[in-house]
Length: 244
Image (cartoon, rainbow, N blue to C red; front, side, top):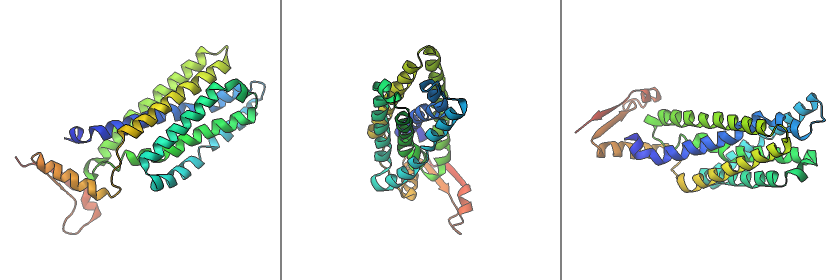
């Protein structure tokens, strides 16, 4: 019954989180590697310093994204972040030679690329993986989505490693390829977000009522919570019974 009713929400949250992890994790983990390939003459200490600066750009993304999520909506915020990240990534990949020749500009643009990922999916992915589901099955759905998303992080990291290794003798070309591929995934993320993700009520009780009604229509009775004392701990006492 869970899959039958919520398959679209599970797919939307799972694939968008998968794509977010595919982009965000490797671009963060390998930031120092990318920098060292761009500016090979720098010492290791300076390379690490540039890497720290790039990763510091992660910080403003969730702050801005959290504000936007309540202003324009979760789906709109995620699509905006994916879309802007794709545009900037294509610029970095397409004009890579000119941009990397001005090294501080490359660092800032790389950092903003990461910021946009956190502004969009990074700031709302946990919400769209929890809010669309009723309380009684929220943890199970969120766990399933999260587990699938971790595959994206693994595959993205492996792909990133393979690409950089393939272009070991041509580091500029390798960096250009990873930005173009990452941007392509961001476009896919924006499309899936806009057309597959649903705008749902932010009142979690609304989905609980719809789920309970759906169970009744299918011949099941949902019973959860402590109806006498309204004790929050009573939410742990939940069960579903067959009525017909």
